[in-house]
Image (cartoon, rainbow, N blue to C red; front, side):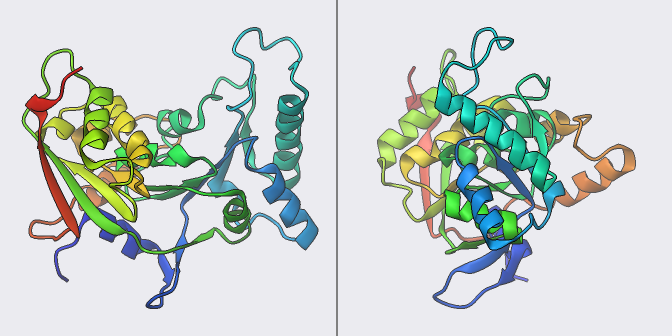
Length: 287
């Protein structure tokens, strides 16, 4: 088999059906949902008499409209209260795990995925939120989707998607003291433009990327969307594996070792070609 990029490996492993010039049907490993973009999707299932195809691969949390002060008090905003109550009813009816407002596992959807070990290298991940690309920091192909697509994934565990082109953004050298991941991604967006990533999945490479913490990598991948990209990716490495080790939903014991052996094969092969490659100097990034 010819050399492949990280994106191509994940994409190829999840193709259910592909036809030239048409959308590919991709299998989805993990579907994350929240209270804002899921109500209409569940109602669509209900009206069509459908069930959730794989409820064990769907996880819900409340995060967009939760109180930031005393959660023991009623939610004052009527729309926010209705959305959260609706999510509770839908999760109970369709058998989906919900990290509710008083659950210690509750949090921002793109933070708890990694923190709980739900997000893992090589996965396809979707959520009805534009910044789902955050999970790409773990070498996962993560797409933000709309409500009609949320319904489709709930019903079929698949997503219809045109295959994006690949772009490598390589950042050579080290970031200066006091320069962080947010500075870096804003610098990169400034260089390629807010439409520079349209039609692409961006893979970030180079010394400056490798030296970022997992939280820093999440910051970079999160803002791939602000460059217009469909997704952002960073190859998994020992830093990734160390972060995931021992997380509640991560593999345990020998299963974790076997998972690492698979994950180590994900990084882009030597000689693999991207549709576009850009190189930047980390020393040019300022706070």
